[in-house]
Length: 236
Length: 269
Image 1 (cartoon, rainbow over the protein chains, first blue to last red):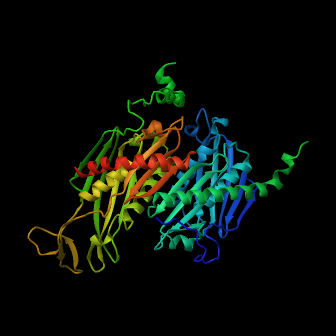
Image 2: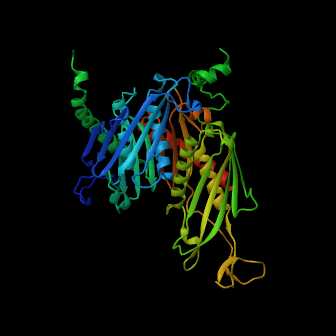
Image 3: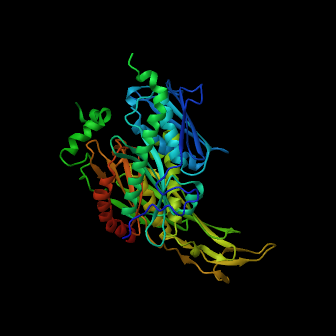
């Protein structure tokens, strides 16, 4: 069987197959939230805000031994639909794993994710923004799980992988894999396939490519956070 | 401590005791699925229907066919409903809605994919075609919603027989379900899938072991992954938990492949 390749030729913006769009992050763009972050991959941008840990608004949300996580995803235009609800559920499962919720019993942590411009890999962007906002709010987490998307295009011979696809590239490709990786433990935190099914080897190379770029993304995040956290890191 | 108390207050420890012996609290082995019971044609009023039980989980699926005009191609629309009746877990609306949208979206996409379903069989005339609404209602929830809903949807679609049509004269001529003895425009026909997408779900236990066909208590302990095999290729839905991707490839995918013959037998009887 032909191995999946990361050919450069056909990408419209001239990127290599394994090249991310330039990521950008901005901590605390919103001043009234307990923590907030903006994350972008090229033209896809998402803002996330975290409120809490605080007292839950209703009693039945309160869990005696841990915090309740509430995720709200708002689309760029219009009212939330099934797609946003699915994203909410997915983020909730992922963040429940990442956040050390037993540290904050009987509280609620709300994460509000506002999609502000959608040009492909939106789910990955949203997950990254949410993770950064939680980091900014100082919520205890067991891992930094960052997220990327990989699109797979079936050509005659071997399938072609495109990392971090734009909306136009997503439309051209048959399948899309969105994954989150905890790079320090080298663990897959979540993986959602959509579109056509993939054979095992192609899926494995998607995961490998995704894991590599999550590492790169984490290094980038560390670099951008260094400035902000300097005051904390400096020995007194 | 009392076993029931331990299960409630420290489920991880409770499970660890069992897993050490290679068993699960309901008496199953780690790689053993629950008894499945499928009944096709469970509803008289739908074009096709099926009810499926998997241990204590049970769902009911019905297909309603509607004539649509000015649509180029027919489609399958799946909607999954998890009412509070099915389990206390869904009393919280927000949580239930998330799982419902995930299942509805994923199954709709899966059943409309060109490898699985040929929309040409829904065509009636130029610009008239059938739209299929698959409604899945969960009656009792005890884990493994993905397998349950997908298998029920497949069984209901395979049970579906589209009614014969006749032309109805009136102010606006239109098509209607044929009365006996009338002149037919389209014959009644049975639906068929090009390939069956077959699902297998695993949940991760505290010790890092994966168990097949998890019940609700096992799902709440950590990550779960649903693998769906479509014509020898995989769709992977893994949510909420750290896992080694290598184990998916080496351990879970061969196991899931081994389950296929059992699922095919279930759907074919």
